[in-house]
Every structure is written in structure tokens, then in C-alpha cells.
Image 1: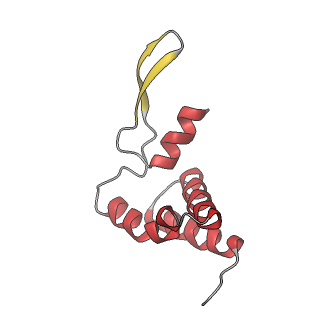
Image 2 (image 1 turned 180 degrees about the vertical axis):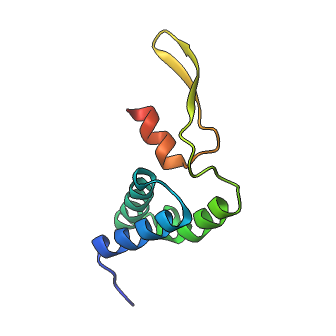
Length: 96
């Protein structure tokens, strides 16, 4: 078994995402979330998803430059339209 240190794996994922055209913020979020999933033992949501993500981004299935928008706001609740953007970026925006 080959072991790769988390920081090196994050840097690799970040570089692949950035090369595909993702923003630095999105590249960081994707790399951090994928590696964190692997470190938690949830490999189904880890780095093994990166080839799928890259295919979606480069194939037009995901708008890797999108950020989403508030579609509706009522009191303390909003409906957020992710506009087919990178999920980790949309989730971070909604949490913020």
C-alpha cells in the first residue's frame, strides 16, 4: 500500500482543480473536503471522486466558475440556487 501524506495529497488535488479552471477558493475547498473525507475513513466521498469532478468540470456538467445566488428570501429563510456550481463552494457560501 502506498501512503501519501495529507498535505501532499491536498496540494495535488488543489493543483488539478486549479488546472481545470477552478478558482483558488474552490480549489482549496474541494481539496480540503476530499482529503478530509479520506482521513475520516469515508473514502466514497474522498479523493477517488476527483476524476469524476474533473470530467464534469471540463465537460461542461458543472460551472466551475459559478458561485450561486439567493433565489428567494423570506425572514430567516432563503432558497439558494447553486446554479450548477461546485458543490463545496455553494455549501460554504450558504454556511457563511
